[in-house]
Length: 201
Length: 201
Image (cartoon, rainbow over all chains, first blue to last red; front, top):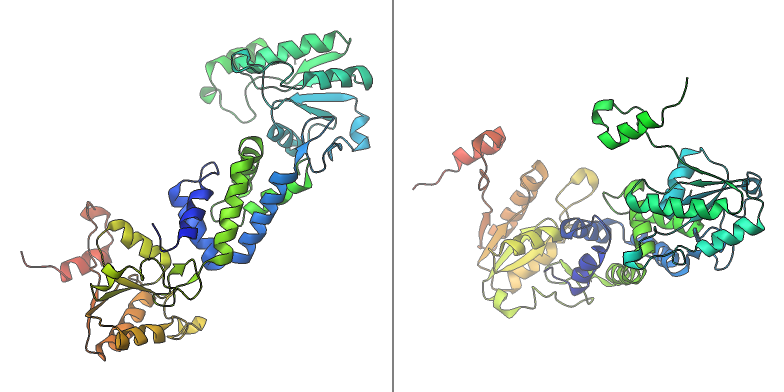
């Protein structure tokens, strides 16, 4: 307990953030109080605005600022020209792919994966919206970038069979040894898949 | 860049906190957006209230909730009975001593140490308020708990000579080998002081 109730409440509240325990929360609280009150207040304002106003893009279901309006990526006309949709599990996957600067088309964010035991079916992943896009837009390829877990694989298979009905090419991002990875430090399953999926040179 | 301006601003703003870089800030932002919007909003409210309202206790200069009112520690009558003041550099030092449950008296927080080159003199540390307490309250001992650095030592000497004029006992917390510390892992200066300050058994 410190000398101030407000300070105790602040330290407790900061612990809602992942990776922030009592020690870091205390350090953050004293740092902001001692030296960065103005910046700290601007921070709470920015977080408040983001948490209150960010909604899902009606096209790709990624995060967007204005309700019922397409996000920055979907409203970029140049991206539409690529006629491809990359399907990912989370908004942070979109950010990771964008950071790699290796993809220029559009996205569709599932916000999870199929998991019947948890009550997560095609409807919860918004797959009817993906269907709408496949029938209404001119899409030439759907790239599935779900993670390589049991649930990710099941989700990928489900979406692949859905896309094939529209006679559209479906692909899945490659599995294999990471760039710069030493073979000794790669797990056996990945190595097996990497051998299986070998390419001719 | 993500798909949302508000999200980008949130990620940048979160980095005002110490130890939070771009990667942690992104992780925190997505976590709050995906799963803890309500808790995140309560967090910003608590931080906002603390940063806007916490001021310094007029008696000990530690953090307090209500302006110009004594803090929880100073308004605790039982602590006054001990007739001692522990002088520390920062509010987090008070918290550390309180957590050790080894001290029952009152405090005085300097919010720094003497550093003439940085323009920090006795006035900046509020030492006139400490003087007022020494002349007005019944104080039997002043315990100096500034850190064992050059600046901490200078500050301690200055305060000690100030207190002695009031004919009040001055002490400084002990220096030595930490509890459970192996001699091999303790620095040479600490070890030398520990030998120097040895106690009869």
